[in-house]
Image (cartoon, rainbow, N blue to C red):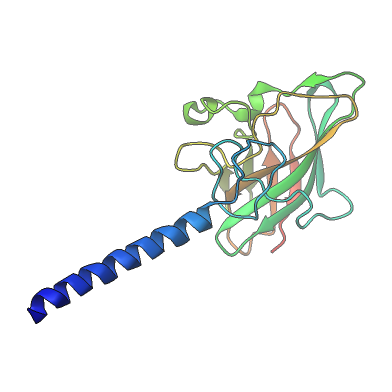
Length: 196
């Protein structure tokens, strides 16, 4: 009888541990309100909400002057405000996409790149890459388990004079790499300094 009681107690403890682990995992992966808002931004983590992607705060780690300005088509300018390396092995690039022209501009579809896995998730900055000249490596935008790029998504057009905060998340280069070149389809390239 005591063996049977011990086996039941062990099963109960295992079930409790699994339930607690799942609850903590769900709490850790949550954060998006599920409303798909393009400007909702959880903290700098690699998780992404199913509708809007992971979007760190646009104000997080920004400096007064942009680290770089990348000129794009039709008066679009990408002003890079920060490139933050975190302890989890990620590098998050925060920027402002500005329409410096006098007319509304459709955000170029080419920004998402041409990889099949990314293309099926709509407009994004999935085509962005970081080039580490020192380490002779190119880093591509990270993706979640469903293949969604960890960037700002679902941008369609931007009005004249409008500025939209955006982000892109990459694997972090080695700690001794302090500068990388950001490349974005249809935009000029720019060298940015990494902090963190």
